[in-house]
Amino acid sequence: MKVVKKIDELRNVIKQEKINGNKIGFVPTMGYLHDGHLSLIKKSKEDNDVTVCSIFVNPTQFGPGEDLDKYPRDIERDMKLLKENKCDILFYPDVKEMYPNGFYTKVTLSILTDKLCGKSRPGHFDGVATVVTKLINIVNPDSAYFGMKDYQQLLVIKRVVEDLNLDVNIVGCPIVRENDGLAMSSRNVYLTEKERESALSLSKSFKLVSQLIEKGIKNPQEIKQEVCKFIETHPFTKIDYVELVDIDTLENLNELKDKFLLALAVFVGKARLIDNKIFEIK
Ligand code: AMP
Image (cartoon, rainbow, N blue to C red; front, side, top):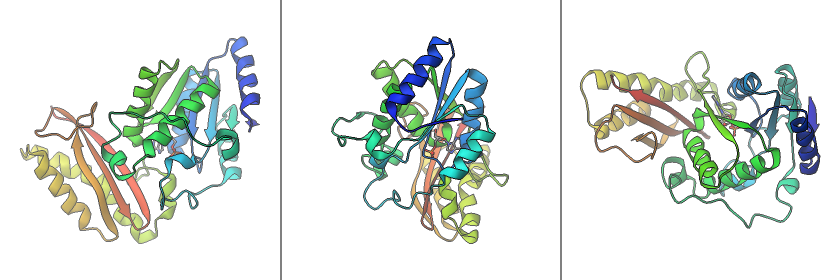
């Protein structure tokens, strides 16, 4: 695996790959890799000739008081995992390489980002949209792979690509979970053993929603309240949001649709965990 830290060098490597007729797949990450990230690498490898993974803990998407400094990092372990999974190129820039002149030009959306995580993390999606636009311009991939775990992020990026005519195919990939249902996340390392048990309340609430719907409950507010009640019975939990929303616009539902997204953000101890599921009522 080639490890590249400089933008110019990466551009030259990619240019050569393209001259050789190779299709490029790109997986942007913040590192501390787990099987969720590796599923994106696997998909990219299936679809492309060359897979580029980036590891960059992007400071501009963290708000004041968030976990930028504490965000878990282990580049040696990540490189080992990437090599084992036959990633071709790792792009591992430092902050100076990505933001040599600060952060004065932003990609800001006037839809989607005022909801869910955007509401509780102001400026977060400006940081995400900007860094992903920069990374796509640097890597110039044919396709880029994102997890549906960050469902809102995926919609935001698809919108940016459409609105700014970025020449890349965005591929959304399913959420990878631990055996007990917990969505894999780099932030799961923050959880103590007891907190981890409570963290299962997020994925367990999906079953509760299915049961409520089977019982004929059609009021989104009522479903939301039941989910909140259920999560709150678990120690160490503090709900950021529980919402039933439209899968395209992320607007709150006034009445249940045949297809909707349940989106959750819950602090469990120090970890802010997110999870989601699309429900289809037959
Ligand atoms: P991160 O390193 O957390 O910024 O995540 C990098 C990419 O991996 C994003 O596209 C995430 O949506 C994706 N990802 C993170 N966790 C999972 C998971 N459990 N399953 C699938 N994709 C994931």
